[in-house]
Image (tube, rainbow, N blue to C red; front, side, top):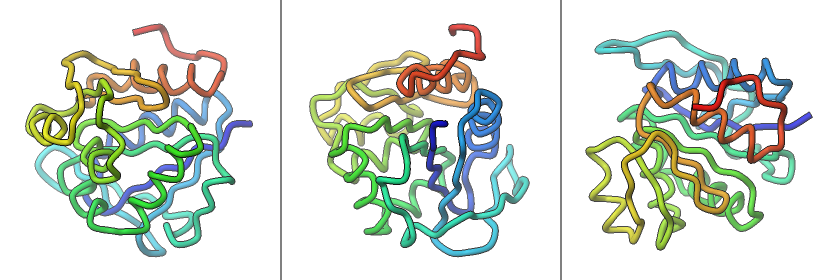
Length: 180
């Protein structure tokens, strides 16, 4: 069974956590949600708060050796808060150094730039952060999913099927989604 860590905090784009989580679980993955604090985190849906999800562990309790991949949902608030947390950035670096898949969607590639792992890599993201990624040395492309080494990036909720499918391929999981 593949173990996937999702790091998120209040303001995560609801669909970008809930849908990949459900698809990965359906394919047999074990999902752990890490937050900055114990308790629950609230999603953002449309123009207001969405549903809450329970945090399984805090980022301070995460051991990267316990997981096969890292998934970073977007939303504007979520990655902006997370990129200010040294432990989150350290964990992203550890996953990268281990060559484990790191899947980041929408605004979440901000975290990859903050961890200084996008230089020379082909990535995609929400349009408003593409300049930030270029300034961090990334080769920004505009397509549903960009895969460069262990980095998997996507632009928006509409890309979730391709995004999740790419992560499943990277984890060598049996595909449950049609190729996007």
